Amino acid sequence: MTATALDPALGGLLQTAAVGRGRPYLLVHGGGTLRSLVPVDDARVARRVLARSNAPEPLPRHAARQARAWALSRPLGRRTVPSDVALVDDTLLRHAIGCLVPDGVHLAIHLGPARANRKPVVQVWDGAARLVAVAKCGHDDLTRALVEREGLHLHLLARARPGDPLVVPHPLGRVELGGLRLVVQEALPVTDLPRPPSPAMRTRAEEALVAAWSPTRAGRAFLADLEERWVTASEELGSPSLKTLAAQALARVREARHQGWIDDVLTGPSHGDWAPQNLASAAGGRVLAWDWERFDVRRPLGYDALHFRFRQLLGTSTQPGVKVLTQAQELVGRWQGSSGHHRGVAALVLLDLAVRYVADRQGEVGGAGGDLGWLPGALHRW
Image (cartoon, rainbow, N blue to C red; front, side, top):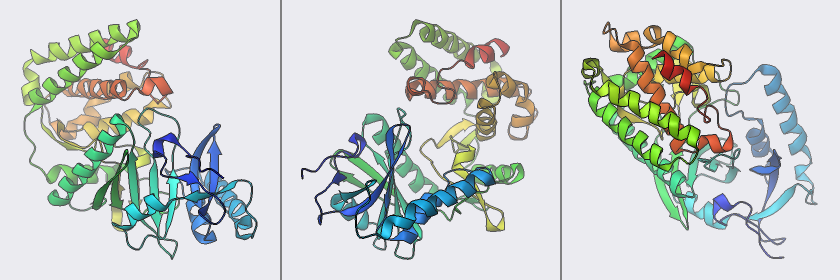
């Protein structure tokens, strides 16, 4: 039997194998595509992998997930190989990760839904069915740059040591493997059903991050970077309507350059993707935060609070950008003081998010907010 690559994003590192030459993995499909490979040589690990939620979810849905995990894992101990289980040659991937995580015994690979910045994630489980590490895989120019940035940011955060209640993954190392770039980090103690931190907990975690650096008034530097990114986006867009929208956004950025309030904007560190799916609460009031690829130390203070609210509104409001602007004082006031330019700061953050979506080609794959249909209203209300 000829080995066959399971997914192009894995660069052929995981392939179906002949009997006796691979490990059994349950192939989980969704939306017509392969979404996960679950190790089934240990039923406990299989159940834990299948039962874990990647984000907070309602209890009924989580109960259904648990029931499905039990149903799928029950027959996996049979001597015959079920039709949805494949023997997979994971030798190269296992060896590469094993150099950094010696207690890793089982690998679970999650490919995720189709999107431009999709990065396969490898979960590393020990013999006691405990998640001990996570590896993110960059497989093209965009995703390799993202995982490389996350690795660098985790090392920077490890040196800065933000205090309680914020908990950041510890970096374990990186691996170059064929066309893949893997960044390996310790797993955070997230439960199978993550509990979202309360608004007060999130604020304390944001404060802990900001306190690890000294805020400065570098609003003009942030604006210059934002202008450069919109110039690049304007040159690369093919859609006439998006080109027009980008031109309008760039004009507003350049207008801000000539307004004195930009010099008063306090800047500092931000997670950059402060959203419900990247946060969980833990014992002792701690806030676990992962996915640090968007971290930066030179953004307007309040960036994370604004981004979190925007992501909340994306699924519930037809004009999430406008609503963020109307709530700007509430969201930014504690970070920027009584400067009176909260709406301007909020508008710049929205423009920063918009150009990120353009660069990541989120509109091409239906990513939330990626079509920028929310941006014209925000530009009009600025």
